[in-house]
Amino acid sequence: MTNGTAVPNGFGSEHPNPLLKEYIVLRNRAIADLGQIDVYVGHEGYQAARTALTTMQPGAVIDMIKASGLRGRGGAGFPTGMKWSFIPKDIFPKYLVCNADESEPGTFNNHEIIEHNPHQLVEGMIIAGFAVGSNTGYIYIRGEYAYGARVLERAIREAYERGFLGKNLWGSGFDFDLYVHRGAGAYICGEETALLESLEGKIGQPRLRPPFPAVKGLYAKPTVVNNVQTITNVPMIVHKGVDWYRSFGTEKSPGTFAISISGHVKRPGNYELPLGTTMRQFVYDIAGGIRGDRRLKFIVPGGASTKWLVDKPEHLDVALAWDDMRAIGTELGSGAVIVLDETTCAVAAAMKIDEFFKHESCGKCSPCREGTHFLTKVWERIEHGHGRIGDIPLLNDIAKTMDGKNCFCLLGPSSVSAVRSAIAYFSDEIQAHIETGRCPYGGLHPMPHVSTAEGGARTGQTSALVH
Amino acid sequence: MLARYPSKRSAVLPLLYIAQDEYGFLNDRSIREVAEILDLPYTQVFEVVTFYSLFYDTPVGKWMLQVCDDNPCCFTGAEELVANLEERLQIQAGETTADALFTLQRVKCIGACHRAPVLQANLEFVYDLTPDKVEAMLANFRSRVTSGERLSISGRLAEQ
Image (tube, rainbow over all chains, first blue to last red):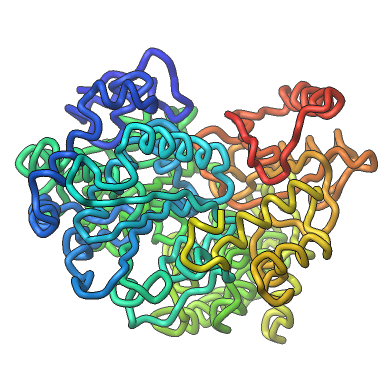
């Protein structure tokens, strides 16, 4: 088991994690000051990159990542090795982009990796760049992580000084340059094609796919986009081997996942868990259960985009693994478990989630731009005691027009998860709001500010239905 | 900076950050300057400014206070924090104090949910900000303005 660190790192490192035998990603918790290059190198840092560049062919690195079963940690869980293998060999240059735009509500695992284990991310970028034949990498970090960007800038500068970045690395003939690029506050830039638009200096609106970034990505060249945590796994797989890596997790979801847990639990923070750990183990054994020993009401299991889980065995005994979560109709998502107790108003939670999507809608397609606005408006009036009898069917109607492929990207359909979940599990509570003309929980204290300025100009007119 | 990218248009975000720190916000002149450096039409830079939430095209205080009121923070003290700040600063969220020291904003998830209530001040995180700590925090920010410490509204000097 891994014990907690003596000195808290601000992300819950002091809490013991009895389900994990060894850290893969959050090794900063096992080794003090791992973010400093001397310490990182002293613990065999950059040896995996050297091994890959000097003793392996790029194709062999891709095969190794494929064999490891590593899946993308940004949300979709797509096999990383397969993504790398889609890059055409005969088109130059190619780009490697690390998606560090972590903005999904409830997610802060990349935040810890960036601030406390930056060299493992840099080393992963070198190996990934070599594997896909890219000589240039960008780490696109959300603008709010201003300190994280400075940590990465420093780590990259140190790596250049040691000859781990730049020309002819370890005499292999392979060149690799790496840059940090700060976003400026836009959730949609976590969508990979919007991220590429943003990196090209445009507003961050998604592109039509196909063509996929593997064929036409950054500057219309072949591009791989991987999440921070995905890339941070790579050096350890190369260094310790596929069998070691597969000794963690499950057959279809190997390895570990550093997952953020927040809300009404006793020990919120990041926890690196072997994939396959159950939600019940995570919430109750690891994070200490519900504050004040209250009752659990619901869990938003993988970020605001995912369908909620409630207090019933098939939801709590689900394994934290991509396929298991999908089998019960939700998603593992970005590794963000939000736990809310019995004092939480489900209408307020759904309202805040849809307010988030309204704020973050890029405005490109109508179903999302207007739909997120309508949903928020209907939730607000229900929460504030002005709900109407037909509001539940109305929410369902709006959701239907936004679901599936009606929107340009996944942001619109994501906003529907809260609607479907709240109606599925808490329709009585919604009805009670409407019938009594008040929130049984007294509303958020104080009542949430009804936004007027923000988003108003962009979303423009609202339909007569919602007014 | 332009050498980092095959296309210089890519430098628009970093240049806007520098301009914003220089002028305190992105006024018309700063947007024109960035457009000239990048050989872009003014409108293409202006639309970028209006799209991203960390660019401010109207004057803001020396300190931009951004409180996360998203899920789950809204259920773990964010609303009380906003109310407390509004009372102490005598402004509503979205406004700037009369002495131009503070602008208060509600923002969406800033990736520190486990330590709510939380805000960023010029993108420096202030964690576990229960109402009893607010007065000391504001006093600290006021003294950093008085001492002439170099402040960067865009977080380019952010420390932990």
